[in-house]
Image (cartoon, rainbow, N blue to C red; front, side, top):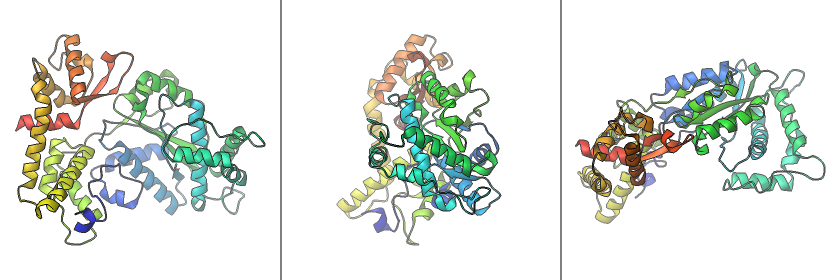
Length: 424
């Protein structure tokens, strides 16, 4: 049994971020305010918009919908600035140098302009948008094709930066891309290619993230014809924005919160409608079942969708084995899941573990410095408990600053399931 056999085009509970397309617009729930705020920052300000929020809350979805909407509006209204989303987002890991990053940036921006050739507008003095033949020729060279295949494939390594030892080198390529951008977008009011620097938490600490962003300020962020958006987990972006060297460059972070606990049914309804290809198609998971999962994960859509998909996979297996899905299947599955999760973890709780666990579940994001408000006067004792919770998979550190005790922690889906079980 599969979703398609049931009458759905594909998995309605895919927990991947919403994409830059019309279907994703229809799937969006209760994010109009955040999308509008981000759009306004992109369209009307020279500062770099920044987004933060805990894992799974929907930051990338908000970002993608805003970019899709901006591009769609600019294509249909010539009075709007032409805002073209770059064909991929960018990340900076601890092993990627600034030069590696710039190599990838110039290449992807060039490829974006080539792919969006039909959408480009003719600048003053031109009958149509200019086509930069030198850039195409450079990208079509064997070395650049190999480099492109590397970054488009496994994302693995930058063993060699693009270069052409004979003739035009990468310095000339970068200059040509910059010239093309200035020609297409002579002012901020005419538009830009919009680039996203995502998952800043990969840099592991706000200090190292801040240092990298400060380096990019005078290179990537200063290229005419590009607009940027920075996105990362709670704490990382705020730490970057506090840098004196970035004063005047960044907007204060737009914080994406979990969805209201009242919209779980709407999320389910839009998913069913968006993926249904047969009018009478039904899922093993009912609307009420999904609301239960949505409530259990406190409105975290990614976690709820992932768990919904797990149940459907289990139900499909049962359908093959038993020929039918029992009426109490969801309740039985939930009971087994929660009991197994509890048995795996709670047997190791001792002393003040349960008290601390209940306290951190109330706040969801916290730092060790908040130990007194979370019921533990001794910071070292609190850190020892947190270390145990990390090993259990109940919390993860999304930001490690200058020392372990300065980390920012978030609770995990496993913790939310344990909390739900204990509350029953």
